[in-house]
Length: 326
Image (cartoon, rainbow, N blue to C red; front, side):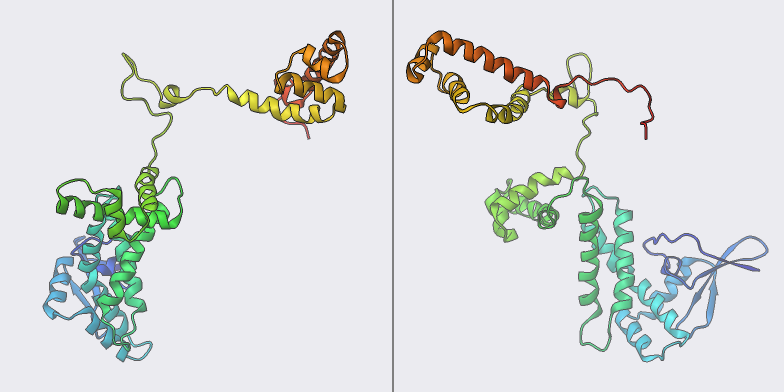
């Protein structure tokens, strides 16, 4: 017989966790039938035909994870039985990880992925639990697993990043919304949600709106209907704002106006910002209307030449080669 390490690390509810952790071997006999070797508490290898047998043997012992970890802590470092007790402790608590993962299903993530996150958090809880403290294992493991599930939603499922407090509030909003809807027989208001979540109404409203940021629709996605044909969403909502050109022109014009002499800058301000006629400007400056007209023509010609001379206003030339010269 030849021994081959297990390659599949996916943990499935009700199956032996040794395949997902370590210290498990698959053995194949001459007929090609698979056998599993799982280490027991004494460190000896126990061979059985199926993983279901391993589960039955574990359940027959009726030993809690906390008892197994206390027995493990009582063994000296390097004792061969420590590995077996660790694996048995993980197996005994897998139903707990499964139940916690089920709480978060229906939120856009596959249940299998959530169970994987919960199971690996359980492994960390088993390794980090200190039996010397007067704390039950479940009191230590449950917050560890829930924290890992929340971090999974916060860090890996949002396509658009929002502040962490809004993310955590959005994750908590779903269960509270369902509970209040059942209790009140109607859709709860933002104020009612804020009271139960102990949060500001503005934060609750923001969390509710930000939930759609997790998986935003693509602008290239086809619209539902558009007469007789479908078109991309961006074609339906994309419009050119004419004010953009006005903003660009103003930013280009400001330094040109600042470079004018005081009298010419005053004339432009009186004509185009004060809405005065040429005769009114001439009367205030003690000049003739013809002189004001000639000055305005010269000033506008100078400003127009300055705007057209800006690099951003110059027409773009097509590149002669796809490779930029060094």
